[in-house]
Amino acid sequence: MSLGNNERRMLRAMLSDASRAWSLDGLLAATGWSDQVHVAGAGTGLAEAGLVEIAETASRTVSLGAEGEKAASDGLLEARIWDWMQGADAAECTMQGLFGAGFERHEAGPGVGLLKALGVKVEAGSFVCEDEGSVSATIASRTDFIAILASSAQSADSLDQALVDHFTGRKNLIVIEESTSRTWTLTKAGKSTDSSSLDEVSQIGQITPELLQTDAWRDAEFKPFDVNAPAPIPAGGRPHPMQALIERIRSVFLEMGFSEIEGDYVQSAGWNMDALFIPQSHPARTMQDTFYLAEPAEVEVDPTYLDLWAKVHEHGHDTGSKGWGGTFDKDEAQKGLLRTHTTVNTIRHIAENPHEPCRVFGIGRVFRQETIDRTHLPEFHQIEGIIHEPDANLPMLISTLKTFYAKMGYPDVRVRPAYFPYTEPSVEVEVYWRGEWLELGGSGIFRPEVTEPLGSEWPVCAWGMGLERLAMLVLGLDDIRELYQPDLERLSKMPIL
Image (cartoon, rainbow, N blue to C red):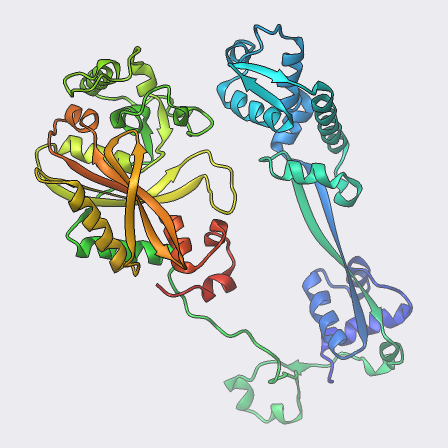
C-alpha cells in the first residue's frame, strides 16, 4: 500500500519511540499537527496497511446538572419533604399541611410521587409509612450520592449503578458524559519500516484543467485512491412516517366531506375541562395529570360562559341535569394549561357556530403528565372529529367511524358501550388486527350539559383517538418511542404510507 504524506509523517514520528503506545497529545506534539483529524485519518490509513494497531477505551463521567447543583445546596426534593413529615404532627401530615409548610404545587406532586415509590402511602388524605427506616436509608444514600458529585465529577464505574440509573431518569439532576480515548502502537511490520523511506513528497490529489494544460503531470506523484473502498449509498429523502400518516388521515377525512380545524396549545381550564362537564374535583385535573402554566397563569374567559358553566356544574341549569353540586370556582376555570385533548377545538368551534351544521376534524398535539414507557408519552397527537347537525345520531357516528377505518385499511370494526364524562351514550371503537380486537378511541353523543351552554340544541356526534396508537398499528411497532427516535436507518426501513 502506498502511503500518503500524513501517514509518512505519523509513522516517522512513531518510529522515534517504536515501543511506545502513543496518545493523541503525544502524536500531535511529535507531528506538529494542531488538529486531531490528521491523527485519526493517518492512523486509520496506517492500521489498514498493517503498520499500526489502534486500541480504544470508553469511559463515562458523571457530574451534577442544574437541578443536581440545586439539590446539593438545598437538599433533594424527597429529602426535604421527608424531613418535614418526620417533624410534623400526625394531623398536619397531609397534602394541605404540605402546602402550608411552604412547598409549591409543582414540588408537592413530584415529591410525593418519589416518596410513594419508597413506600409512603396516602390514606384518607394523610401520609402513612410502615417502614420509616427503609425510607430514611434510601434517601440518605441518594443524598450522599449527590454530595459526592458536588465535590467533583466521578467515573461512572466508581459509583453505585442503581443510583446512577435512578438519577438518570430524573430531569437535570446528573449529566453523564461519554468519551473514548485511543492509543496507537506500531506493529512488527511498522517497527521494521525504514524511516529514510518516509520523506514527504509533493502529491497531486485533484486533476484540474490547469494541470492538464502542461506536461508537468507526467512526472508528478498522484495521491492514491482506492476505487474499491466501500462508500455510503445515498438515500433519497422521504416524509417522516408520522407526518405521512397525518397526511393520509387528513386526505381520508377530506375525502369524506369533512373540514379541518385547528386550535391553540395553551387553553383555559374552563374550555379544556369545564365546558366538557368534567367536574372540578376530577383527578385528571390535578398537577399529576395536567401541565398547568406559570406564564400565563390565567387565561381570560368570557364571563357569560363562566356563569353558564357555573350553573350547569352546580345544579344542571336548564339542561335537565342535576349537575355536580358544590360551588363552581371561576378562578379555577381561568387557569392556564397545555391542552390535554383536541376536543377543546371542536367545543370552541360549536360555541362560535352554534346554529351552523358542520362536519369537522382536527389532528393536533396534546400534553399530559405521563410516565414515558412503551405505550405512553407526555406529548402525543389526537385525531378529533364531530358531526353537528339536527339529525345527527349514534348510527351515523358508528357508520362514519367504520368508513374511516375501512379507508385506512381496517374493515373489521366494532363498538362497545363505554363511559366518558361528556358523552351519553358513549362507545369505544375497536379494530381487528392480528387475531385480536384493539381499542383505538372513544366516541359518543355530547351531553346536553356540554352543548346547550354553547347555544346549540342539536345532537353532536363526537370521537377522539390517539394517533400514535394508530401509527404503531399501521407501522407494526411494539414501542411508541420508536416513532420519535432519530434513527435514520430504522426510519428508512419503515413502510411508506
